[in-house]
Length: 115
Image (cartoon, rainbow, N blue to C red; front, side, top):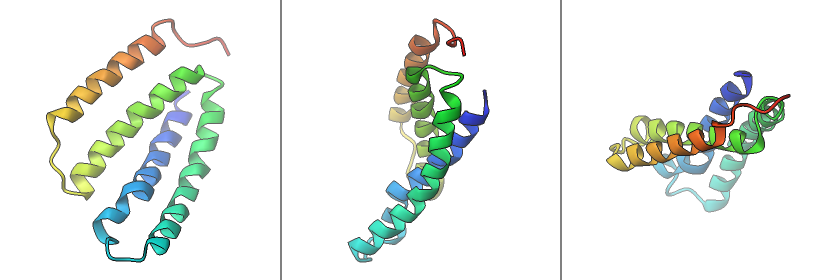
């Protein structure tokens, strides 16, 4: 039950670096090179994300799985912004987090689906 969550956490690390990591050190590199590097990083994201969703679908509904993914994405992105990109965390991250708590509440209030 926790295996898909762990896989999604690592998948999100790769995804975040594939999508945004190039903004810090590759601004002056040719776009095609940056795209290829991002695709290479995204390959590892998919190697974790696809099994995470396949495994997770045995425990969670599709909507629950998506909300879990979004919560993980926001947490990883906040850490990435602060630790890697040296961006300040603003209250907007808190408000977004509160919205995600609401989303989790509504998706999980009926409990987990029967496997």
